[in-house]
Image (cartoon, rainbow, N blue to C red; front, side):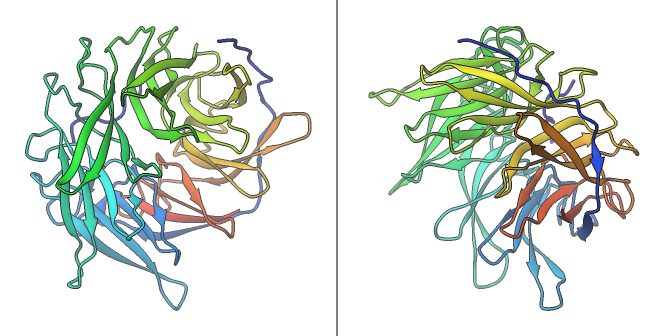
Length: 411
């Protein structure tokens, strides 16, 4: 695995919620503990579910060849879960799948690996079910390796389909920028009769200090007009990261603009896909920044009628109630928000939390589960998903044999 994510226009800052957190009764259950080989090991990836409630995900390590694998957890008749390895990566076919998966309408899975492939910089792949059991892989694109990889390298995020069946994604490094390891890219893969055609929509210039973004993280949100929204971990006007918009032009090109720049006090190092609400506002998380201790935030970007965006910090963390916040955030039917912290909590192993809004615009945190490391896992880096019953699912490192877990929480 080449890299892990870098850790290290009117604006107003709305009320920052620093209310005391509460921990109320919720139920956490480990659905599967990874064993390394031939099972997988360590997942930084959100699981996804099919219509039957089965879960699909990836591990960056382990599997038959040690290069990671794609797994399925199937519900069984006795309320248990059965683990099936759908595909084992071996190197030239990709290594270290480090982004969540996405289904097409036919039931095929799509994803990325952070490394190797035939050119060494990672791949985009499709997995299709077969009658024999293991799924068949088709490589849709090979990324080059190193700073001379003008199409990008090290894709570490999930991709997203538009209504026309095009796939959009990001690479953390590479492109045509001139800075350290270039600046990363945004790309599109379009299906055709002869395969998938790669297009680079934007290449970040590679400047950590800005004013443009640098090192995109997470995937993209698409609005009704086809505009793309994402986050950059560095750059922006203050060098603390930014949220960007890519707008399509009539000639097929895209125009980029920074719609918000973080300044540490309101967040630093945004690290997950932004999420729209029904009013067109964007929600996300920052790994660091925010008062009182630079431990991370959950934020909302408010979209105004004149296409200006302003930020409200919904909650700033203090370490005990979360540190190094990870998303993307998800909402239940009542408007409560759920996400994760990869550190913090009573054992410093991270936690899953709920943010509950009130009528005054403040949000109160409820800690749903505080990870202990063993046997329940640690560092839920990928956040959570929520099903129609309000149950949460996610992945961790740590666990019974220190190879990670898949968990369920009933709030």
